[in-house]
Amino acid sequence: MSLGIRRGDKVLVLAGKDKGKRGKVLHVYPELSRALVEGINMVKKHTRRSQQHPQGAILSEERPIHISNLALLSPASNKPTRIKTSILGDGSKQRITAKEKVAIAS
Image (cartoon, rainbow, N blue to C red; front, side):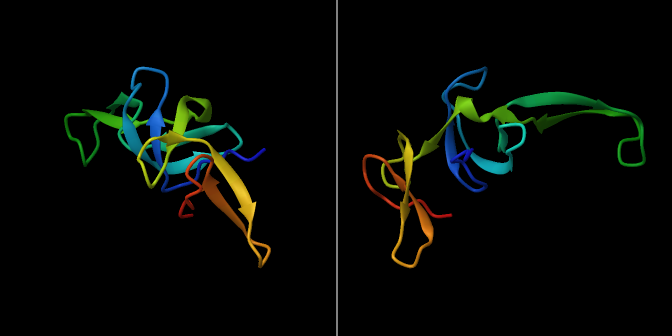
């Protein structure tokens, strides 16, 4: 099954504690149907003492969010959109927005 969202895409969060926020996809985990989005689903991680953090530390980091909670943003209108796949003359595939018929850079 194709997820439709790739690394580098701009997405909108549809559900969860970060609903309404926008971000850039950093990594996609297709086997888990999840994506890591910049600045979304931030959690606090407690770390032990180390040379980098002699007192220990509490760090903020992103965790993956389920693909079903994300919507791809159209490059033309910056609104959430569905995508279609069109096959070009040379046989390669290209992602386009469903309404505006604008190509999405891969």
